[in-house]
View 1 (cartoon, rainbow, N blue to C red):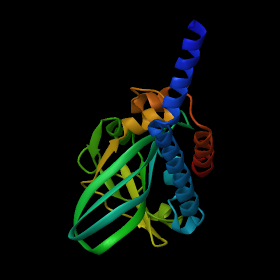
View 2 (view 1 turned 180 degrees about the horizontal axis):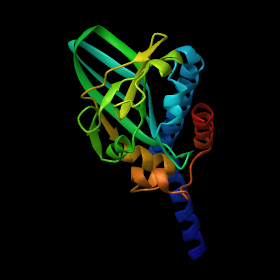
View 3 (view 1 turned 135 degrees about the vertical axis):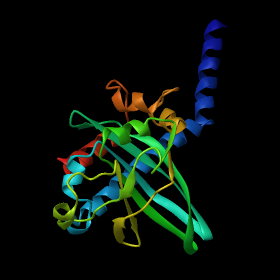
Length: 229
């Protein structure tokens, strides 16, 4: 009887996992988001003359990639999207944490549009602001439309006053974009689901070397290393 009870309990637990796929589906969604982010970075950096200046990437303290930010509205518009963010410590890129970006604007054209967004964190201050549960670009950290292309390196102020530089790609065009007032927020639930550990915080994701990560994270780090060395 005891053995039977154990078998029944084991089967019940297995079925509960099979028919409660919320965490599993969320983890798969996270993997897809990372793959989308890798694709965005690859496509943008494939044309150096129109991409993020290599010098800016080499000195970056963090990078956020947010594929498919949806902009929509009539005169008064809004934008929302989800993506990933990584930080660099001692020359090595961290595991990604998941983020969402939300903001509003006035004066957009009628309709909706999907835009890929990249944020390059130039300073530790910008990275530290990111570790808050939520912060506003331009208020908690200075943000500016980033320079584009190799030629921009010579023309750009060496000091680069802003802490964060922002870029967008829409309809094949890539350029700096103003994101003043947009809110960037760490998605703790997405982190929990992706890494299979409850109660994770962004700082732990970034610094815990023992944190087990899916294979796609290694691929992401390899791509980041290629473009930032």
